[in-house]
Image (cartoon, rainbow, N blue to C red):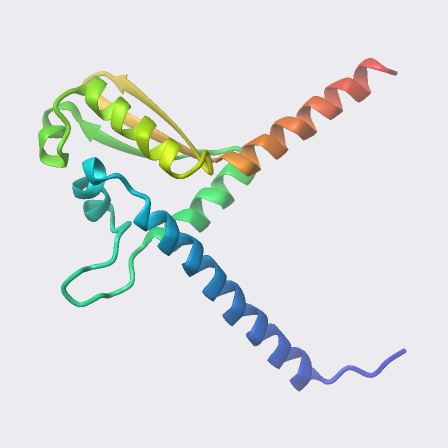
Length: 150
């Protein structure tokens, strides 16, 4: 058995963490820049864009991590807006909100699946990590196919 250095292993672990954080923030930064102007007010409220005053980091990387974890466990990340608050976020109507989130989904190249629906005076916005969801659906489909061949 090869002797491992706990110090070397820890240093490698920390370097991998730094690299992963840098990669994650780069992806989030690119996604932030792709947010359509029509959703800037909403994105600012959610902290998905950099603060232009002090250039502080934004919460999009953490939200994306939460999104991947939730999708992996079969849950979606959700937000809801009361119907009367639509103008506060720059939406004229429920249909306008749906159209703008469809635009965001397209701008993000389908990385995030967004489902919007009206629920008793509230608008629910459900987000899924598309790649993870597709993988879960593929696995489920393969399991179903395997069961049928028995």
